[in-house]
Amino acid sequence: MSENKIPYKIYLSEDEMPKAWYNMRADMKNKPAPLVNPGTGQPMTAAELEGVFCSELVKQELDNDTAYYEIPEEIRSFYKMYRPSPLVRAYCLEEKLGTPAHIYYKFEGNNTSGSHKLNSAIAQAYYAKQQGLKGVTTETGAGQWGTALSMACAYLGLDCKVYMVKCSYEQKPFRREVMRTYGASVTPSPSMDTEVGRKILAEHPGTTGSLGCAISEAVEVAVTHPGYRYVLGSVLNQVLLHQSVIGLESKIAMDKYGIKPDIIIGCAGGGSNLGGLIAPFMGQKLRGEEDYRIIAVEPASCPSFTRGKFAYDFCDTGMICPLAKMYTLGSSFIPSPDHAGGLRFHGMSTILSQLYHDGYMEATSVKQTDVFQAAEAFARVEGILPAPESSHAILVAMQEALKCKETGEEKNILFGLTGTGYFDLVAYENYHNGVMPNNIPTDEDIAASLAKLPKV
Ligand SMILES: *Cc1c(COP(=O)(O)O)cnc(C)c1O
Image (cartoon, rainbow, N blue to C red; front, side, top):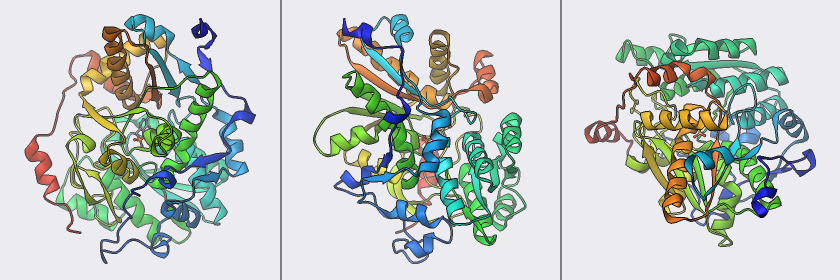
């Protein structure tokens, strides 16, 4: 009966939108381990980090105690252009699966960048502007982050230099052109522009690049160009803070209808959307107020949580960035170039790594052909063409809903639908043509890259 009252889409009014981001670290008993300077072996100080990142973002990065950060008015106005994002009750998917479960998804693909990344891009660009900087540098893999950042920089009048993983640069020319439309310069990485790029090219001629290489290049350009700082679209604590807007909106919407999710599922690359989606729920869990089952879904071809090691490692291939304690496959790990599902980073957010290590969440890994099968099934009933990354969460949400069908349980399942897949159609094409491989690293592959972990 009450079910009929829940609309297909639960929206919030502008007044109901969150006015502050929530910092999960404030409620964690075991705080995430600090970033460490690889030269000294000591925790990175604010002064050291300020050479690379904007000052306000350094403060957010290091702040393990402040629970709420007010969202500046200008960022809230920008959010209002494309937020609140809808929380959708997947009635059609439920019917198709014949499940008694109630499935909800928070859809972050309703903006031109096609993903949740704009939530942090606008915040990071805003603080760069506040500091009087000329511009920012960054890396991008599949291109969603570079697109989001170029949109944010165009809005605020900042220069934006993007280093794009070479295989994506070649496979996704349209993504590149969207970034250029917003005024960004886009360079395939590794490039001859930087010392680290030239070194990587000399050691690995013909490499298709990796996120780790592109990060090294973008950091080098930031620290060698006055008036520039580096910004990162995932992994960092500050990014999870900004992405908490996803979970806060979801919780406000669900609370309006008295819905409590039993299971919360998100895909995990560097952990930003998952960290954002779960934030207020994890806060309750950490404070002992409520319990939720939380599942991170990662690709079998880049399984940081499920097959990596919880250790200090470099965030980049060039080994110039600080060390982070995280679940990692080793900074020299490069997923197979045939892997099309995104989520290619070798490590994971230190916050989520600590929470996983302490048993607050689960993780599972899935094969990419299964991911595309789920993507297609979802597209056919719910209408949205999902990003391959998001489809990792779709797959596991469907699996959990089918378990409910067996047991007859009416569980509430919430998952993050992080974006759309319009720029991933070559991957869809390979899937449809039956030529999508499942290249999963062997234990030897992983052991080889883990053997190179730095000694801390
Ligand atoms: C970047 C991206 C992801 C993965 O990044 P996280 O930081 O793990 O959230 C997932 N989905 C989409 C659509 C993305 O663009």
